[in-house]
Amino acid sequence: MMVTMVTARTALWACVCLLACRATASHVPPKMSATIQNLLRHYKIPVQERFNRQPVFSRELLATKMEAKELLMSAMLQTYEKLIQRMLKELPAPTPSPCPSSAPTCGGVGVGVGVGVRAELSVVLKLVQELRRFRFQDSDTLLEGLESFRHIQMDNMLIQSKALWELPWLYEEASSLAAKPRARRQGPAMRPGSFGTGSGSP
Image 1 (tube, rainbow, N blue to C red):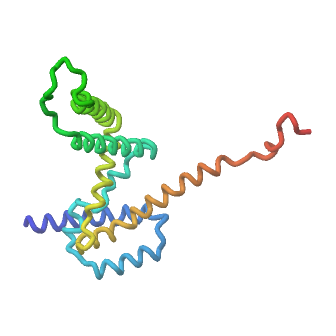
Image 2: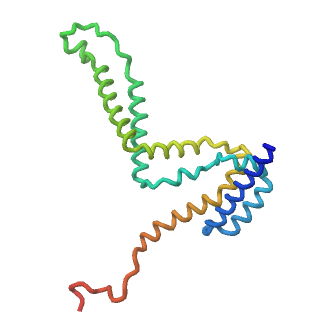
Image 3: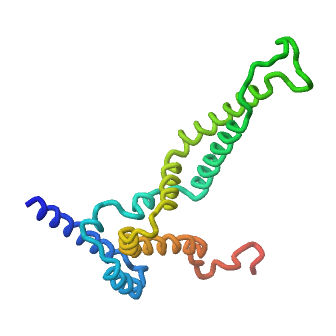
């Protein structure tokens, strides 16, 4: 009984996904849809595995409204954080100074220079981390999602089949996104008679 309920639920989920893809696939070439359907006969996996709600490419990542500059800035701050952490690791471990506490230098080397550098790097690191945490939290979540793409198991047939199944909606999203900047660049249509209406026109 339980198996029947799970199968029915999975079939219902499959129908919903199919209807959603067909309803929005205005940018997907018919040849691509037909080719993917043929390929899925070769890369065949159980229906339960295909609709286990663990997609290869999550739609949630595409729900973000952030600008590319914000994402880029988050990536830069993340790189700074890793860089400063590496710089801290490369500093020599602090050791007790053999020089008298009143001596500003010892053998030409400033006393406590390593300690001072470590403290100052730690201050900078804390400021960078706080900025990322309070101002770029959504961007960091998206970056983590992007990082997960590097660990996709390319040689796993289950992953290959699910990725093929997901390609039409992703292709649709990418095509729609690519069309928006082109429409913005074209700008609003010029009204008749609006050309040459400046002070220099006759």
